[in-house]
Amino acid sequence: MALRKDIQTVMETQGARMTYHIANCLRSDFGKVLEGWYNGTLDTSTVRRELERMEKDGLVHRIPSSYLRQICWQKGGKA
Image (cartoon, rainbow, N blue to C red; front, side):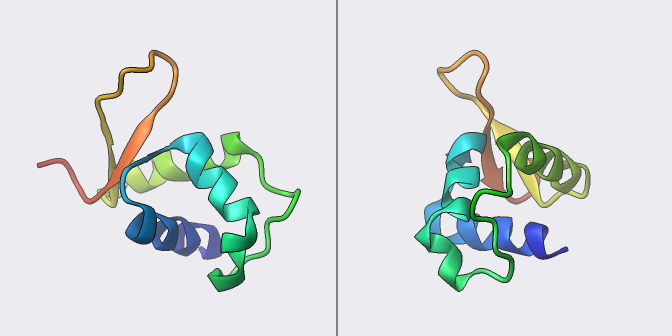
C-alpha cells in the first residue's frame, strides 16, 4: 500500500505523466517525502502493474499520448 500512496503523491504534485516518469520520481530525491524507499529497488514494470491495479479501482486512468508504446496516466476515474 505504501507504493500506491507514493504514486498518488507523485501524481498530485506532477500531474499527468508517463509510467517511466512516475518511476523515476519514486527513485529520485523526490523520495524524501514518500513513505517507501525505492532507490535502486523499483523497476518501471512494478510501477506499471500498480498503476493498472489503481486503474481497476478507479483511482487513475490512461490518457491519449503521441507515443505508441508509452502509457500516460492521469489521476481520477474516467470522465
